[in-house]
Structure formats: structure tokens, C-alpha cells
Image (tube, rainbow, N blue to C red; front, side, top):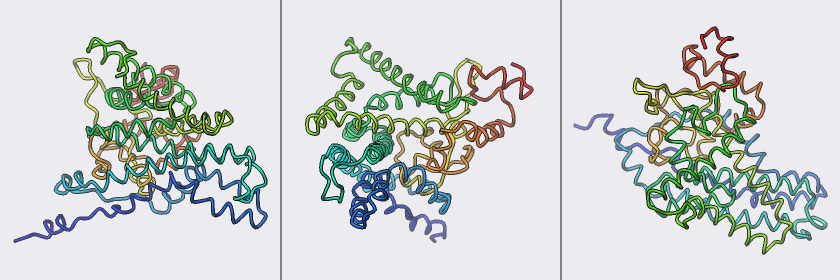
Length: 403
């Protein structure tokens, strides 16, 4: 006789199955706002129309946070019995593949808009103003930053096609080394003082940003040099994955500059810096203050759900392919996004990533929001926290702990 539980499992459906296509809003947003730009220009509202070129930051800092507050947490976890079926459903991987052509179509179109001397077809007299150009570059950077997350999903997989697609996606922002450092560096050292991508308690985002950017770059190069050394090859061998990933960026940027001219250079720099800074703000909040303890043999304990901040807010999860279910991701790095679960034992953020990215830029607000949560997670024991070294003695003294 079939039980109700068995029937529930047989009938289980991913309620987000078709909502994952909302992830395509980011790489198409620039094109979607053009009819509104044209319409506002026809009404003589040129100043208002140029605000729409800031659609990327508007999505990141306004629209997604409001939607996260409106719709809240997801609450649906796939049961064990459907995991294999869900994992092997190719529809989900096609949802990530299709991001890439839209991403590059927007990059090329953005390059055209940035350098065009006559946009009369859009209702402008001459080129875009510099405020509109900056907004345009930031919007393209936003889709590049979200594209790094798409590359993150693809780069964890064993399929060679997906790994190459990951590198292609990273080429826009010049962050190809992330493919190496994240998989073989961050996942090994996560939630330890040695990991450049794990933020420390008391460390501001502005201190973390250069440490993570340059630390990740150095780590990626070192990892590839070590790999090639074991094969008796030079670090400068063409099979160096850092070099061939960067080569994709060089080729892409060179082609764009050749087509649209040197005037495109500010656009390329702005979009790249903003794109990878969005990634780093997410890195900052994902492991802030969390620390894996050392075992008796001096090694760090295995990474568990308690070493990553989790968020189950549904809207940002749809845009970031469940990246916010970060605790499960670190426990099961090759698990596809549709099967990631919100896990017991994981510390939870107060809202979705989109709501918190802007707060990472303002250290007093961030620390007021998060420091007490870190301490509560460790039952007030500051000695179990990954503390910023320059603040260690001060924080230990303030908390009444022995240094």
C-alpha cells in the first residue's frame, strides 16, 4: 500500500522550476529598458530617461531588496528521494547556459551605446551624457558580477564544456583566475585566517576588498604554478588555466576596442571593477567572522554548515542560482544549484544578499547588524571567532576574554 509520504515524494515538484528563468532579467535588463528610454524622450523627459541606464545598480540596491522583503524565505527543500532525478534534469543547466549569450549581447550593445556619437533613434541629440555613460557601465558591470556567479555554478562541475563556459563568462570582468582560486583555494581554506576570501570579525569591506582581490590572484597563480610544476612544466606554459582565462579577456577587450575605438576603455574598466567588487561584497558577507577550529593534530576541522552564512530569501536566490544556500554548497561543492538545501545548523543572515550588499559598504551599520550575530553563533566565545588581527587584543579585552 502506498503511503501519503510516498505519494508526496512521487508528486513533488520544484515550485521554482520556471521561476529560474527570472535569472535572465540581469543580462537583458539594459535592452528591456530601451523602450522606456525612448518613450520618456518622446515626452521630453531626457533627464529622467537617462536614469534608466542605471538599471543595474537599481536592481541590485533597490528592486531585489524590496522583493526579498516582500516575498521572504523560500522554505522548500527537495527531499532525498528526488535528488538524483532533480540533479540529472538538464533543463536546469540550460537555464545557466542561456545566460551567456544574453550577457555578451548586452556587453556589445552597451559598448555601442557608450561610444555612439548619435543616438537620435533613441531620442537623444548626440551621444549619451557622462552620468548616463557611467550608469550604463555600472549596469553592464552588474550583469558581469552576476555572471561571475553563473561562472561559479558552471566552474564547479566536472563536465569540460561547463568549465570552459565558466571561463568565457568570467572574461568580461577579467576575473578568470577566480575559476582556479575559488575551487582549489577558497573551498580548501574557507573560514580560516589563511583564506583571503573569508572576511574577519571587525574587518571592514574596504579592508577586505584589496586583501581578497590581490590575495585571490596570488593564490590562483601559486596553485597553477604548483600543478604545472608537478608536470615538469613552466608556470608560463599555455596550459596554465590562469593565463588562458586572462587571454580570453585580452582577446575580448581587444576586439571591442578595435570595433568601438579607444573611447571604450573607461567603459571596460568601470564595468570590470564594479562587476568583481559585487562578487567581493558577496564573498565578504558569506563567511564574516566564522572560523573552523583546529583539531588535536593541528589541522582545521572539516567544513560544515555552521561555517557559512545562509539565506533562504527566494527572490535573490532565483537571481543567484541558490548561491545563498551557501552552507550546503560548501558541504557539497559539486551539487547543482537546483538541489541545494537550506540546512539545519547553518547561521542565517537577516535578509537576502541583495539587501545586505549595500550595508557592507558602511562599516558601522554592518557591524551593528552582524557582530552580535557572530557572537551569538559562538555562544559569546570570542576566542572561537575569526578576528581581524589588528583588532584582536582590543576585541578580546572588550569581551572580557583572555588573549
